[in-house]
Amino acid sequence: MIRLITDFDGPIIDVSERYYRVYQLCLEKTRHPEQAVTQLSKAEFWQLKRSKVPEKQIAILSGLDETQAKTFANLRRQTVHAHPYFQYDKLAPGAVEALEQIQQAGIDLAVMTMRRVRELDYAFGQHDLGRFFPENRCYCLSNDYLKTRDIDDKPLLMARALVELPPASDVWMVGDTEADIIAAKKHGIKAIAVECGIRDRVRLQQYQPDLIVKDLNAAVEFVLNAAFAQAS
Image (cartoon, rainbow, N blue to C red):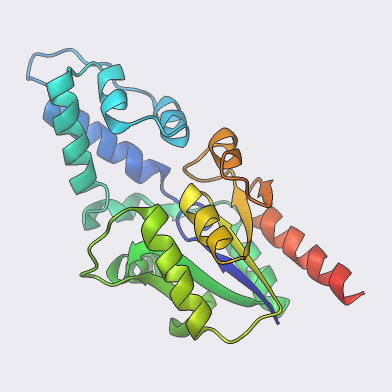
């Protein structure tokens, strides 16, 4: 059996609008009433995020001072995963078609995400994605989980999955961040990084995934071709 484990935000869900809306809110709430600020365009903001520019630096580039930048960063951290903002998430182009393709090919499909249960359930309902991932193929954080760092928490999820899931002859992990690559490599799983999420190619290359592709569609195509070649 071949298995594909995919991250959720990035390969399947485009979070850029949520992140940008929260940036706009935090900038407005942090600036002084008469203070002139420079609101970045969505494209400018998202490129900074994908290059992993720190929140405080993004705030300073937007015209806030050092003290305000700290306030901005803290407010952003508290807000970006607040429930009202998840409505701005949308499906990544071609993601559903890619999931349908891999499901039809009979490849075992699982999702592994740093979302909490309630956040994943909300997205499943909003975008009709539960049909791809039964409960025993969903690996996410409990609602009361105390997060540390994604690069620490995600390998723990991977370890749990490898204990609970039935054996597979070939396992691939698809994700858009260093946490996905680290989680896969730590457990001897092949890592495919996608460029459609919150890290750019330069950042992804630093963590040496087995492959970097454009999006989930390209990752699925590669896995299916590899499976076909193996069966031939």
